[in-house]
Image 1: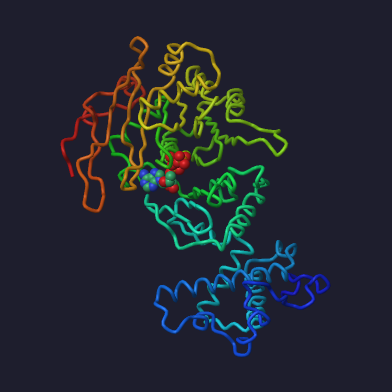
Image 2: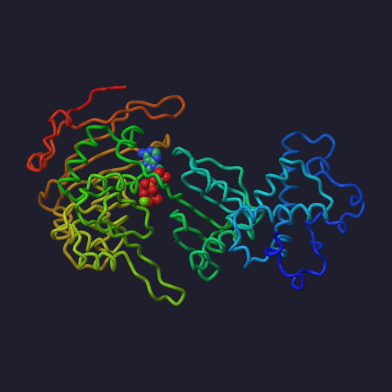
Length: 482
Ligand SMILES: Nc1ncnc2c1ncn2[C@@H]1O[C@H](COP(=O)(O)OP(=O)(O)OP(=O)(O)O)[C@@H](O)[C@H]1O
Ligand SMILES: [Mg+2]
């Protein structure tokens, strides 16, 4: 039934199953053991091995068998026919070839081991090998590989070492190569790093040796189909209901907003959630390096920048997209992350009729965010006196929302700050809401609450004019509430 997925006989190795060198437990390598069938779990163990040792040895043994079988599968499968096969057919074919090879190698596995092995082999041939179970696990947010033997994952804000490993650096490189070649990219010694978006929308970055000193480094930010909504974020304690009310008024009345924060602090998630307050009749254009935003409005145009090809040609930068976007009659422009020269066009857009625009930046506080913007302008090679740059920023940006990933792994909006103008050379701002820390639980959980600062929004009148008459009490300071 599955013969069509096997290589034609002519192209097969002379023996149906080729003896494999070194790691292979093939008969020739171990003549003394070859008579009786061997049990992969029990056979190679010393009589009194302790349980962790046994487990370790069993794992090594299973890895060696898997590596062997994988080679044999690649030799025996007709890869071009695989593309048209259904998953069930493929699994079944892989199981059959594996069973034949195991019999040939005189290896006995129990049914659980066989099931695991078949599943892992399927992932090796068709998926991303050891990474596949992590990619399929919805509770995993980030996957971080530090060389073949250390794979970290982030779950619920906490980073942990997983028990997933690659056989060796070559195995890891093969999986990286599989990922990047599927999206038409290449990574090797001369192109040692790559940033890409996977077919499922996940963000992928890899850096290979020799630039990565101890083995390839990979980071994957998994794409979540279900983005966190404003009510979700309030429920998770990312911000308070009062802050949500305020943010709704700010977005609806078209303030220009910057979400600032460190790596993985929830900037993109916050930006996406804030975009839900944009009215459905506005034309929104989004520009990102890796398309992550998922706006719910009907009139959305999405753009993704792209790096140069191998010959160094064809790059389309965020700035190119932004300039073009300005000719596409947008009501609002959303830039996923402003990190370079596009800052100039972003500020100009915010100052010239595309109010209600939003972006994120990498910074640790509202003040730091302003300095980052100034630096970006300077780095873009614009010769402008600092005061002029500041006045551009001061009049373009209305609000800075600071996201933070706290030590206990929780992600919170630690501050909402309004930019109120300029005093001399200094941009003035006032904090409206903040997260007040009150203590630390023995297990490391941070205690605290959100509070107004007692200052009323400088945009209160504007909110009122647009029909958002927020109660003055939302700005009140909250005295310890647990
Ligand atoms: N308040 C929250 N509660 C729980 N999980 C969150 C929260 N905010 C964000 N996340 C999750 O944290 C991860 C990182 O979020 P996000 O991509 O928004 O961060 P980022 O600051 O944009 O990261 P980067 O700097 O890499 O662009 C995502 O998996 C997201 O689903
Ligand atoms: Mg982001």
